[in-house]
Image 1 (cartoon, rainbow, N blue to C red):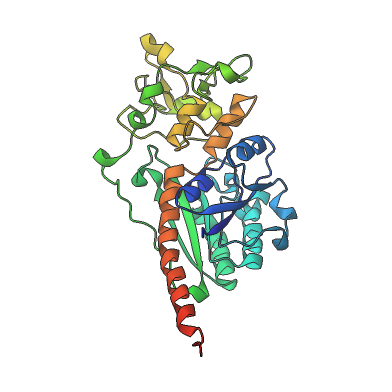
Image 2: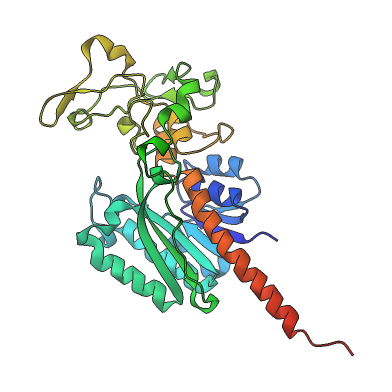
Length: 350
C-alpha cells in the first residue's frame, strides 16, 4: 500500500510529481491561486484539490495521511523580494503549515523555501520555527541544497526542511549530492536542445498562442528588458546548467542560442550587436523542461506570464523525486519493522 501525502501550496505540482514518481500517493492538495487550479486539476485528476486559503482549512478537513509536503510562499524571505520574512503575512503561512501538521501528526513532513530564509536577518524567525516543530513532536533537519548537485539542469538553491515524528526513532539525512563536479552537471543541452528552433513568440500583449504551439506551452514572452535585467549577464551556454528559473516571465533567462552578454561597465551589459535577433527569453516549455516537467504536463493560462509564474514557483521534479526517494527508503524500513513487531506480538493460536 502506498504512503499517502497531503500537499499544501501545491502550485503546478512539481513537488507532487516527484513524490508520485517515488511511489507516494497524493490524496489531497491545497492551492489558493485561481490561475493554477485548471493546471493542477487536469494534471492530477485523481487528487482532491482544496481551493481555499490554508488559513481557512482546519485539521479535520484534511484526510488522514502519512506525510505532509509543501512550499509556503517564499517572496517574503527572498533576497529579490521585500525581505520582510516572518513579519510578512506570506511568511506567517509557515505557521499554518505547522498548525495542520500538529493536528494530523503524520509520520513526516517536507517543506521547501528560498535560500534567503537562512540569511542572518531571518535566523531568529527560523529558530522560532525550529522550536515549534520540536514542540509538536518532530525531529527537524534543514539544509541549503543546490538542485544542480542532484541532476537538475539549473542552479537553484533552496532550503529543505524535513521532519520525522519523534516516536519513530529515526532521523532524516539529506541525500548526498552526486553531480558536484562541473563535468557531471546536467546542462541546457540535455534539457532543451531538441526544441531549440520551434518556439513561438507571444501574441498581442503577451497572450498565449494556444494550440498553435507544436509542443505545448513552447512560447515566450516578448517586450523590452529592464535596466535591472541588463545589469548582468543573463545567458548560459548550452554546456552549462540554467540560471534559476524565476516566477516572473520578464526575468526568464535568455535562450542559450544567444552569445553571452558583453559587460561595458559596472551594472550594465549589452547584447552582441550583430546577434540581437538571437536574444529571446526561454519559452514557458523551455523553463518547464529545466524544472523537470514532462511535455505531457500541460500548463493552462491565457497570459503567458501565468505560465512562467507556475513553473518558476515549482520545485524541480527530479530534485523532489530524489528527496522523496530518500524518505521512502527510510519508511520502507520503519514499516517493515512495524509489521514484523506486530507479527511477533500476535497471540498464539490454541
